[in-house]
Length: 453
Image 1 (cartoon, rainbow, N blue to C red):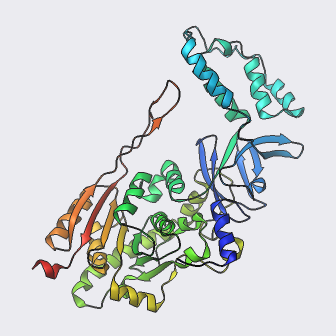
Image 2 (tube, one colour):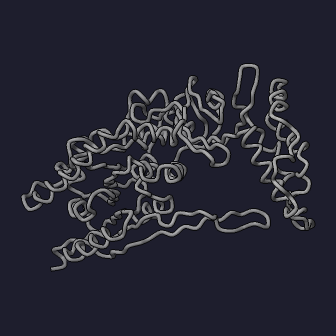
Image 3 (cartoon, helix red, strand yellow):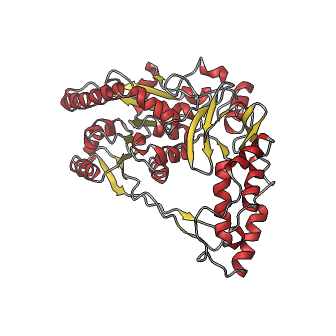
């Protein structure tokens, strides 16, 4: 077990529980209506509706804290919410009304005349210092049809007004699941449409454990690399191979708030350094290098717009974070340790002599077989590998070639399936909108082809 000094222990504790100046956070606005990443600094701001709020109140708060937009003398600000101050009575009341009431909404007509409170009245309440909750209660009290609605409709009305006049922000910790869910919801194409259940199965099939040496060919901006490093917990090594002149971008890794020790374990090395210098694979290597160079040029051409989208996770967001130019770590480590440094020669020598303990390939823009035939031989014998692709056919072709060349056994293609449910009193049902597919996984175990002859 690794030993850490007191500063590293303190940093690790902050990474897990408490925010600090300069850390990366995931902001969940109005229960998932908007999800975006931000870097907490004294000058960072976020736009919620038509209000710009400073993120400074979030510094030093535990992850999982909830905030509500309020308007004070100095303008709008994020005020901490007391966990048990609301919500408990609503659920109990809803349960009772669900069992007893028989009314429905058939007699209600939406003609915009039920609400007697005008916009001028609401502005006047705001000038007098009324909170968002007070405005919501006033709207309910001045609604001529609220009492005629069913309990479910009353709750929907209350939530709708709360989102408009008293928006709420949930401070979430960026880790593998939350980051993958946020990207899949807003910009799924940036992570190759990798769904969170597919990511979890990928890590399981690859047997990613502590003290592993995992070879990760990640062309999904680092979501797989960060997930592997998080699961290993600062032990072992994660190696990102690259076949061109430039390492593959791993911008998402900086959102994980990794400690110095974990960042030191994420390295990169060129494919020529990892492969033994034999002439039989030179043709395939050149082909793979050409494909990677084309992809690198495409990344350079779209770097600025891609970085901006990754920071905001949606258009018109004003969260202050630059994932390509800053490292999401504690202030002490940001200037000294960076994930994705060049692997030292002695480490590369150890990998060449012993092989990697597992391999993960996530390169939907390249041919699966072209990548696998160069990387699978770098594994130790009996080591597992997993290949992710958005579509089935490239994996089927790769599986056939692996069988024909007697490079692996226990080959299987998996399609993860996920169904989300809404679980509420008397209205539990599958979500009305769900993703149809989370991609496919080809898994297997590397063997020595000489043993099969």
